[in-house]
Image 1 (spheres, rainbow, N blue to C red):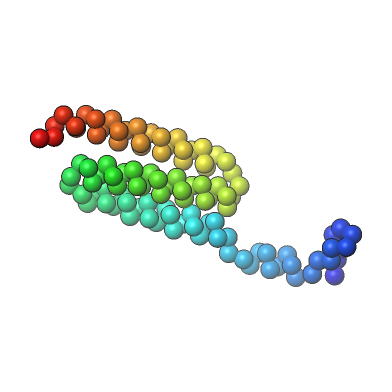
Image 2 (image 1 turned 45 degrees about the horizontal axis):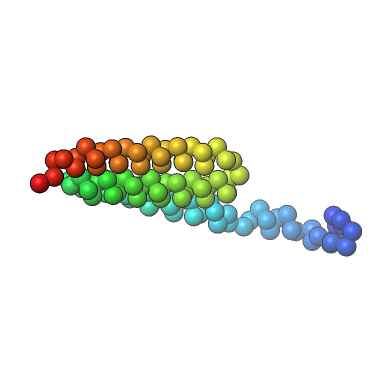
Length: 106
């Protein structure tokens, strides 16, 4: 056993155990990105505008959640900043498209 600080013994295999654990934040990010891809497929498959706008907002939200999970996993804030900027652009575009198309509704 090694002594890192006084009174705290560390087992010699502790480093090996930490390397073998699964990063739960990375797994969560991966799952959220898969769900965001499914929402993008919904944008392509739908024919009505309200469904497409909703799917775009869901994809942006899931993408942001995945990016924030990836930020926790990687520890780089640049991913979170990029995700927030992309989400703001997507939300602004969907609001603008829905305002423009509101006059077309019967």
